[in-house]
Each structure stands twice: as structure tokens, then as C-alpha cells.
Length: 345
Length: 285
Image 1 (spheres, rainbow over the protein chains, first blue to last red):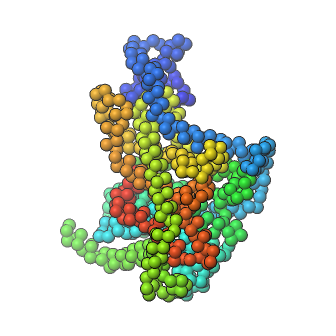
Image 2 (cartoon, rainbow over the protein chains, first blue to last red):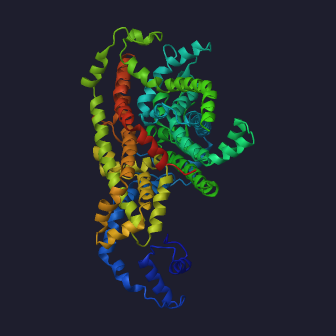
Image 3 (cartoon, chains in turn green, orange):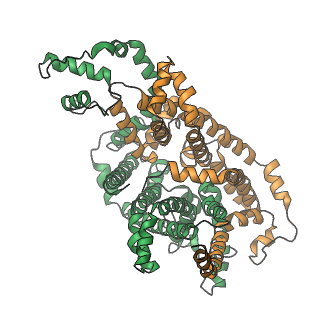
């Protein structure tokens, strides 16, 4: 597609000469052609291309296009694009939200934030949380998908069962989990007792609170990963398995040499999605632990919430927002690049 | 061939029983929180504190009645349903227009427009919360339905989903409609929409569920209990009931009533829903 910033001449020629491109951007092409023609860069064309151009320069047409894009573009500008830049600006000030006055402080918020022990702890917690929930979600999803892969009676029933937590409100199910994690009368310790394991304090102790949050997160998202894996496993060419059966390959070998490489794009996609979801996890942390005990479950996003909406330190909170933005954009770009390079059809 | 298949089936029979046992126990573990939620709501305080009581001696249906008739929970559910219905309706409408423009119209800066939309997709919502909060405060829309709705009018995910579906429409069909002198508006709703209806429905469902469950942003911009969506309302309810030691039976009854509509809806459409999640939103890989 033509974009405003692409090298005009080259694309212009490609569009004029390449019959494979069906819908050429006539308005743009004509105008650029005329411009370049005036500058004597391109030779005159024998085919008159300007025949339809009146339609495209018609102000009514411009209005129609605007009417189609404005319903998304207006709110997008107001609630996404402007705020993103605005967050960057606020992060350079010492504004406290209460008073209208503020002054520019340059990178002070960033140095203060990045050198604070709170940030270091939150960063560590985020890494631990994202890593463990991603590994367990993706691994669990693959295990469930392998169990459900072959069609059998009740297959759909189990799929729905494993997937159902994903659609439920995190706040509601976190309340149940809170009750399950109750050290005295909760179900979690009853299970541990049954297995002859020592009881845990769960969300009451900084040693185990993160474990509890990870369990809830994985429980909620594992069915989602499973659905993607079931589709991916379906797409592995059957002929590969048949060929390896002739070679008497063991099931384990088939799994590691055929299945895993074939589904690796899905694995990668799910890992990135899980990490991005992990960075944005808030609901279950807010309900179960509020970041505690003693900051043991305070992730970067939760720290952002506390800085911005509890302490009203808008500058430092916005600096943290920018850090989160950079991490997320980097992950998305990596996902896109790698997906483009390694996905085979 | 047939006999071999049968033999194989028998060979795998013990494994299947084992597999079924594994699946059944895993499945039970997965839905245990839902069952526990629904059953705990029927218990007395004494029964709740003793884990060995699995089922209540006398089901306390009064707990459900109390939440339904004498608590703000139904109001929260209505709030959530109303706000998500309006929001998703607009997201579908505007998303369809933009996707149509990007796929079928030619205009200057189309590539740039789509690049901007794509860029916004990567921005985590939380990064915009503080400026959006300030913006809503300036517009006087904090703590209003309008604020909840207008700050959530765009679903970039929806635009992508619809664009993906529109691109599958054969160019000839579109050209034919345009030849018949159908305007863009007519072409979108009479030709494109009927062909991509499944995508509209699956996006509507995913967006409705996400909107109904939404917690962080609504809880930041609304304060009055009358406006709370279910998630925030449930938290209010939990904290308020905690004044005399959490009344878990009531909290569980409330959670069950909030979750049940979603689970019922899902039970009805699960096959179709799961298929559309895997097919539409995923990467091909």
C-alpha cells in the first residue's frame, strides 16, 4: 500500500507498470505523476490516466472518506494518541495533580524511579511473574491440547471446561480463590494436608503470595493457550508422522523432532502474549494481595497504579508508564519480526 | 486396513481409560472454583469454616435471595450490561466503517492511517490512564456513564478482525456492487456485512465479555456505587460485607450471580466461540 512517507517515484512506477496491483490509488498516482512530470523526472505517458481523477478530487469524495474514518480516528486521537504523548510530557514534570502549577524537571523522574528500591523489586516481581505464568500457561496449554487432540466423545466438553475460566470476570473468580487460599478453612491447604504436605500461608506470606497469584493467572489463561495449540497441532502435516513411523521413531522422538518445531510459531506467539498479559495484570493482584505482603506481589503495573492513583505522583507514575510502553512495544515488534521471518505456510 | 485400525484401537484402549481419568481429574480441578463458589453460597457460617463439610446440611437459598433482592449486585449487573452494549455497538459500527475504508477505498495517506492504528495496538492501555483521567476530569465526565463509554469507544482489535474478514471478500463481488451504483454506505451494509456476519458476531461476543468484566479503568474513573460495573461493584460488596468479618457465603453468592450469566452464555455457544477464537484472533502457525 502507498503510504505518505514511502519513496514516491519508485512506488509510482511499480504501480503503473505492475499489472498485478489491481486497485491502484488513482488520485495519488495522478497527482504525483503530474508533479513529477512537471519536474521532468518521468516521461509523458501515452495512456491518459487522468480521466477519472475528477472523481477523486471531488470534495464530496473527501467528505465521504472522512465520514468513514472519523468515527474511529477522533476517539483514537483523543484517548490513545494524545494521551500517549501527554504521558511522555508529564513524565518530565513534577506535577502532583492537586495544584495546577508544575515545573519541568527533565529526566529527574526517570533517575529517581529507576534507582529506587521499589522499582528494582517491582521489576524483579514482574520478571518472576511473567516468566512463571508464561511457562506454565504455554506448557499447560500444550499438555492439554495433546490430550484433546484426537477426536473422541466428550472432546468438546473438555475443551469447553478448560476454556471456561478465560471468559469469567477476574475479580469474581479471584474472590473465590481468596477463599480457597484461606490458611484455616480454605481448600488449598486441605489438598496439601491430603497429600501430607505442610500447610502454607498462601496470600498471607511474602514467601507464597506470588505463587498464589501465578496459580490464579495460569488457571484463567491455560484454556486459551490450549485452543491455539489444538489448531496448531491440527496443521502439522500428517505425512511427516507417517514417514517417521516407517523409520520406527519413538513417540518422544516424533514429539521433539516433528511436533515441537512445527508448532514453534504458535509457542512463540503464546509466550509473547502471556508476557504482555503478565505485564498488564492488575485485577487478580488488586483483589488477592494489593501488591503485598511487603511488596512481594507488586509488579511494575501495580507500582504505576500506586504512584499515580494512590500517591498522586503523576510525574513518576508517567515515567513508569513510558517504561512499560517501551517494554511492550519492544515485545510486540520482536513478535512481528520473528513471526514474519519464521512462519512457514 | 480395517482390522488393523480396530487392533490399534484396542491396543490403545487402556491408555484411553488412563487419559480419560487424567482429563476428568484435570477438568474437575479447573471447574472446582466455580462449584465451590456456588456451593459455598448455600452454607451457614459454621459450615463454611469447616472444610470437611462439602455440602451444606440445609441449603441456605436465602443467601442468593438476599443478594438478588436486597443488594446492589443486580444494579451492577445492569450497569455492566448497559455500558458494554452501548460501547460494543459503537465499536462494531465505527470499526466496520474504518475497516471498509482501509480495504475498499482509495485515498491519500491510507497507509499512514493504518500504520497509526497498528501503532496504537501496541500501546498498553495503562500508559494512557493518567492523561485520560485528566482529560475526563476536564470534560466533567468523571464518574458518569458517558465517561465510561466515550473513553472506550475504539477497539483496535475489532478493526483488525473486521479488516481481516473484509479482505477475504472477492474483489469481483465488491466491484459488481459498485457497478450497480451502490454507494459506499449501501455496499458496506448490503454486501460486505452479510458476507462477514460471523466475524461481526464473534467480535461482538468477545468485546461484550471483555467489557462486562472490565475492572481497572472503570474503577479509576468512577466512584459512586450507583455507576459501578460488576467487577468494581463486587469489590465494594466484598469490602462492605467485611465490616464484621467477611460474610463469605454472601460474597460467594454474589460472585456466582455475576459469573453465571457468562458461563450460561458460553455453554450455549461454546463450540462456535472456541472455533472463532482459534481461527480469527490467532496467528497462522
